[in-house]
Image (cartoon, rainbow, N blue to C red; front, side):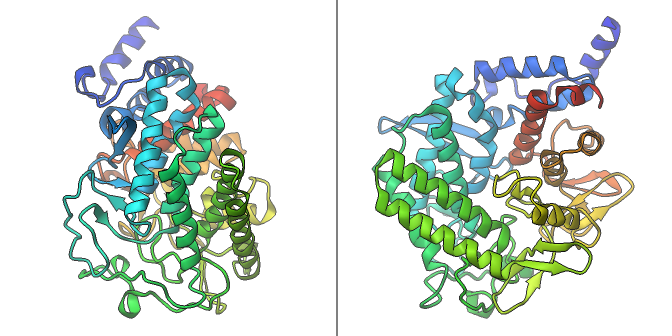
Length: 454
């Protein structure tokens, strides 16, 4: 046994940066890595966890005290910009530990502070620069600013900061981070959601790009395809940063309903602002009612399911994309529970070949999307399948697939070819690493026996 462990240790050498080159170190995270590794029977899976769980801290965060307040800029990995979505998701799995490490708590508070500043710069932007340096997208036909890396309007970009704030507050009870700038940012979120219902006019947001990729620009002079104004919120881009076909993106509208209710609770309990809380609740109820009327539809094979996108005229798009929020991720985001019949039917659909972006090959199977290419499975979708499953065999299947498709790197990638995992995109994609780490940590707490069966 000892010889076997030594051999495994040599084969699975840590892929983390040397200690003196890591961006941020947390003692509680280091202890957790060692604790969880001992519970994992398979040395390769343990090695992957060791690499992925701390990847965001090791390589993507820039933490400082700025004007007396914590400030944390989080890059996605190989793209040196901060996405509101990715930065929230990249640190989400550290929240359970922040009461045990004050510095880690300050780092998360710094993300919340930085996100509020980003939203105040432009609530329609999805990605930001650390400083006002401009970007290679600065010539896009939209209202670009030097602080922006990209300006694609995506509902989830404003939902994720609420989710991070809410979970931080629930864990710590700390309210100091939710000061005047945060409140202004939250009011701007509500205002933007209402503007993008487009009830009176089409609003101020438009976007076009000179590109050969249809998914990187919007039709009709940058305003997007037509809709019937039914109370749903327009999202001109998906969380993949690809343009929507029908602008009512249902996973993101459902996420907005959840986020608005969380924001209402925070506003009521922290700031005693019942009027603003009521405005959030009213919008959540309006959007939810419209989803019930326009987005739950009868599928030929699966019964009642959620459509991925609709336009309010009766047109629906049946598909799912690997990026989160997705239809698959709805129970993970606590929009609904895993046993809800419509969600169960939807999950069965998106994990079948009736979903045009579900790919099954000799080496792996899962959901991809138009962002990369056909036949490219995103490991995030395999991880999300496991996180939303109640079946031990399905979870084990996902773990084994993730173990077999990282191409020997020890990290998650953006995507890999269903027949050849060595054909993959993005060596350094921190969101996928964080999500994989979260899966293993979740299993360690809830289904530890599975970590001994891989």
